[in-house]
Length: 79
Length: 211
Image (cartoon, rainbow over all chains, first blue to last red; front, side, top):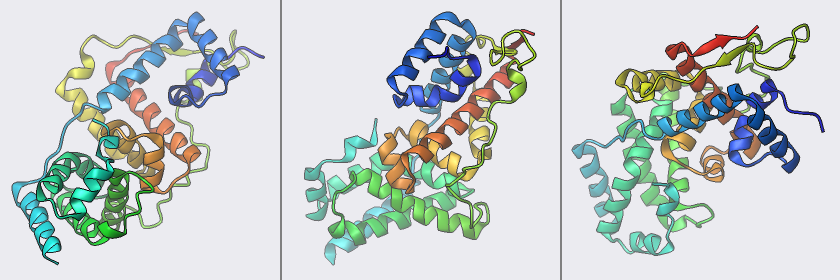
């Protein structure tokens, strides 16, 4: 099994994070990360990016829209 | 909070029985993800609100036919996608024939980032990532930058990264809501995440030339 190089790791990173790499590719990925500080940094940055995307903001409906939706529910319940 | 929290059959029974409190709770829990998802397809907040309201009306009309093959939230997200996409086409932000099947091999990281066959270590970094400045991710400028990058992604990539990373859906839920395959979902997510990370790196100037 050939060693993974940096550009292959970059292409496989989402599959790695998704847990969808084959066992052998996951071992090649982990072996490369253990030796390569740049790819270790790349993986860390990808995780930070994903984490940041998940904490950007919460949105909320205007009170008017929310009340409109609840009024639609009452209409629906009334048949 | 993941959308899988919304899946209970007890809750579905309460809704069908006309329990207003259960309904209101669901509306409040799902409003933020529904607005984010509608925002993938429509340009402004007012239209996104209309799409969410219209989606709830469709949900109510269809509630007794919902078979529970996906979670309640996933089913609702799929309805939001359909409605917001139609509105987006009308608004002309979203292209009518934009496809989820982006099969062409789009380069997400430029080949110049890696050493060529003529260099010492083919396939290894030529321009390597450097650590990002501490706290740089947390600034208001970065938050706005990320929003702008996501807004500029192709629609299918924007939809997937919104559901997966901004709303917190599981891969299977995302496939169901968008009607795409598992592999397609992963390719789109990969492209979207790679571009967002790369844009942050550019903004932070965090690279070093190795060869």
